[in-house]
Length: 122
Image (cartoon, rainbow, N blue to C red; front, side, top):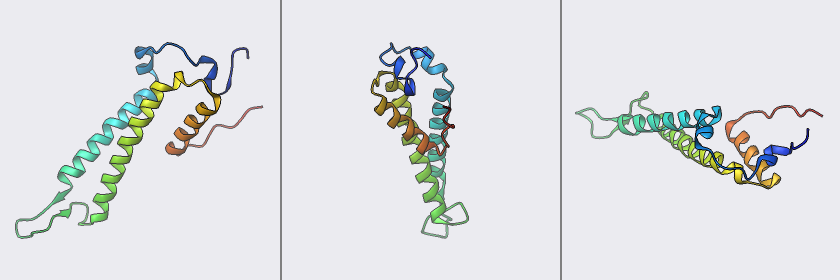
């Protein structure tokens, strides 16, 4: 276990290689989530509210429930912001040298993702 440090801190400070970064599975998933959030947000914000010719007020196409459209717009916006932020963090992550800062970044990613951390092996 020579050279191993918590949260990959042993690899901190290495050169950034864009091709290697794009090929990482988590980067691909984050980019796909980012694109899907744009699609969801665009669809709901653009075509989620309609009005009939005889009605003055617009209503949500989801069972005429205003909260359903608000929820979809909110989730699309949060997904877009989180995907963008964590994609930027993934770019910046190799330059973080402090183990505590790396731990905070990893724990924030786990918390936002809603995942359970892997069991600790002693």
